[in-house]
Amino acid sequence: MRQNAQHGGVVHSGPTFVPTPGTFKRRELRFSTLPENQTQRALILLRGLDGLRVERIEGRRALSVSYDIFDYTLEGLEEALMQQGFHLDNSLFSKLMRALIRYCEQTQLHTLRSPQRLIKKSNEVYVKAWEHHLHGDHDDTPPELREYK
Image (cartoon, rainbow, N blue to C red; front, side, top):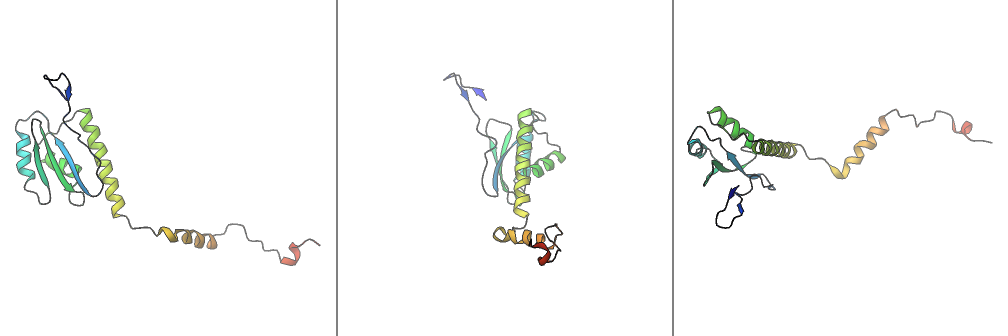
């Protein structure tokens, strides 16, 4: 946030994490102050990747990236950048946002890759398992001995 001198109010730079349905995500990569010009270098590097849209966020050390999570994840992009010598913003806020986004993307990918359950027939599985389970509800006493006379 920065101060707006004309209105005396605070100008917000926009959300860094906006929950989006579906698999197409728009995220923000924030960079550390040093080394200088790393945002521009990262922009050039990332623009070479197929299926990844990259835009510079004016006035900030950040890039906006858009991708399908079946192709890329924020975690994968960040790790690749760090391996190339880039330094990400390590403020508490950025660390928390990265952790939240990583969790959300991993959970969504896990859910999407899991086989579909047959919800309408799921009770049949339990009925069949119960029939084959020794559960103690069976009485071996002949019926004539079970009746009180």
